Length: 198
Image (cartoon, rainbow, N blue to C red; front, side, top):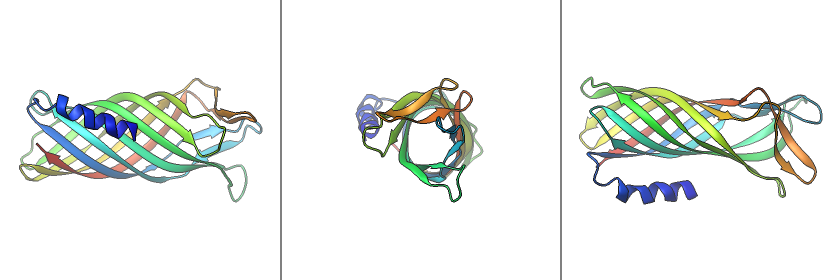
């Protein structure tokens, strides 16, 4: 919610730009794994829907700066057991600033973008601390412009949370829920959105 309010505050500041694009988006996100400190076994995130809001500000010709917020309610499961039990509900929020390059093909515009920002992991267990870490994104897609002030977008994106290898996160009085595997975790997302241009 705080990130959505931030996007709203940025709208007046960007009002003098050559063009603005506001895009509600919805997608399907998968991936993301950790280890359980107690057992060393795998702990995985459920695939789940992610929703978000993207504010695009036109820069040079066919280039944009995007401020993107997304939210994914999911579950963390101990996949060493069958069936895998839920350890905790987990809400993953991201806030990224992205640079986007578009190519003009009439009503169709392919695009590529990369961004940097933060990921916030908020567990559903009382007493367990949330975690905020740096995050990167890389993706691309295509936009279709049926009219001057409206476009539809289809995109695929990778989101990488940067964490110290072996670090324990989501900790509370009884210990930590997970331990980082490698240098963080990566999620993959496919999404669609409708953009209104001003």
